[in-house]
Length: 295
Image (cartoon, rainbow, N blue to C red; front, side, top):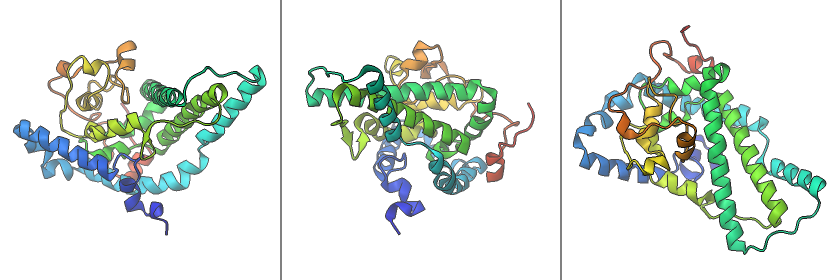
């Protein structure tokens, strides 16, 4: 059996996964330093009341089952970014013909390609995430993620299969279109700046605590930084009962700032997580069928 086919290894050995072992180690290091500085926060973060909370244990069970749903149901129906890139390039060639590319060095093109992939992906992620909140039908699926009453890194994977399909299509379309544009303008010899095959910006973001977004480590940034990059605590605010229609961004906070959905860490002192008693999923079947009480 190929190593990537082993469920319990895939998430820990693949650098494209949030639970990649290097990201986990860096998360533990940052969390340890945080708890040394703020020892009062140990009470919740090292407590069995958090890690064995019914919401957390449901996340663990769903994490296992959702892997097979992704392999058998979601991935087979997704279109690849390569196919989109080829289509984009073909359409541009048909309409505009041969294009003489600007005289940029290979390094300049690589840096521009890296930034373009990251910014375009983050922008489309913001809008799809926002639509998942504002369109009632989509919210019914996305509410599965927000129904978590406690946050652990595994909560990241509490996502309904329909949402996984939508975000998978978003990713393929975004990366495919950007890649097709770059092939048209600069030719087919493209590469982006990466670490272990991961866009270097995404890799750095994962190293400096992306897993803390789904945690009770209230890591905050300076206000001026939170206008550019969302802190882990800002995403925790997004998971609160009252402020879940703020901080839609993935990595960048600039979209929330531009479109009026940004909440700073300093604005929120007390909050409750989850969506209240109407969204109490008690089983994996509840999550999959999005069973909720009527509002």
